Image 1 (cartoon, rainbow, N blue to C red):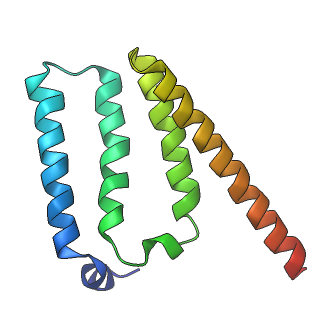
Image 2 (image 1 turned 30 degrees about the vertical axis):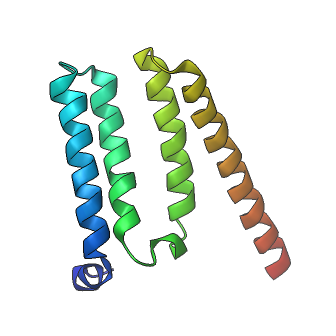
Image 3 (image 1 turned 60 degrees about the vertical axis):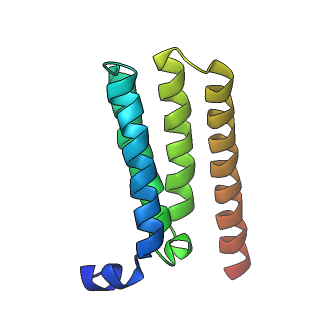
Length: 116
């Protein structure tokens, strides 16, 4: 996808709102609460792109969108668990991510079988 079509597909208002949310959350996570752990930094590297991609029109129709989102959920859960916080929430993220990946595989297998 050329960058000029991506520029046309970004929703400016949604991007502005998401940047404000990410900026405020970054301030609280990294400055207000003190120095972050390594897991928090890696978690931020996973979460911020997932949030920013929501500001692009038509992204949900991309074939890799759902698998990457579910994989991101698994990564978020694993990092939250390793960070030592929110164990139940971390477990829910991992379970939801695995269920999503399984559903995506099942859907693609059914589509392949019906087409063939």
